[in-house]
Length: 364
Image 1 (tube, helix red, strand yellow):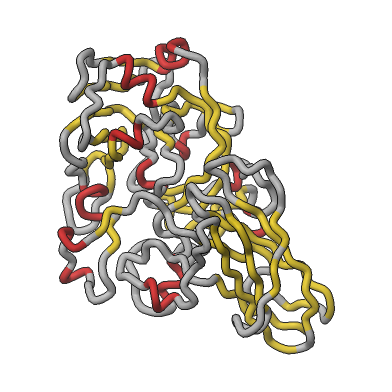
Image 2: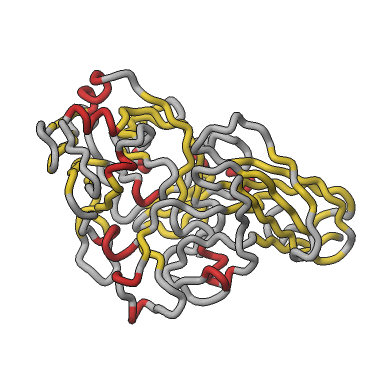
């Protein structure tokens, strides 16, 4: 059962050991740049306590000059880079898939997502300084200082990887600040990786080891866990060979206000939410008050259109007395939209839940 973390903390905890929590959706929608107190927390084990003065990050593997860097070394090495970017758990909106069939993992509502300004050193600059071999087919593996609790396997240091081409894109950071403040412990202090456009699992917190290699990481999170499996597969029959690695996130949209189960007065109601399309712009957002039979176009709010940002939208509609199923769907710049039903994207891991988002309300 989800519960508030504490009377003075806005987040709702799905689990406390390890800590996994998301904000109430009205708090998520309150600011285009998500406040740290409203940013979801995803942990795979106990959060380490690291001393910023002594913590080191190693860079090794297919590089000419292996490095051993402190936070001070990274901050002094080049001008810091700021990137506005969304981080989103691959299990965001898993609760919608749970309605279709049993899934593993925490039952996230649409709040396992947040948008912040990240400050740090470009990973590409660090790899260049190490004399990286920019050869096709290479990968950059990350290891955190945390020990992950791995379902069905031994606990081990958290590890993932991304293709070298993504690592060298310029916007991937070794970040030490979030919204202009040093990282909080729960968000990876003193250093974390931020991989814009990829599932949050790739943005390793408490980073301690970076290795350029000729294959993806063989750590549990990369090789066995964060995979999209076909709908016929179950936990007892899972086969990593049939899984698709989850990197880029799908087109998605969610209603943040009103909340599910709200009782509303008859008449004008404003519906608010977010939409996200990874590296494409959101071209249109449609809203329905009758389960998707009729649609009205929502207003897309202008917040500058940064490449890795999300999109806020709103629509003011008249609601008559009775029960209503509010629905949202988004369209991206390529003319793609979302599947209508959660049944269409169900998988036993509960990843990439991106069907139309539905909220039931009662008008009195």
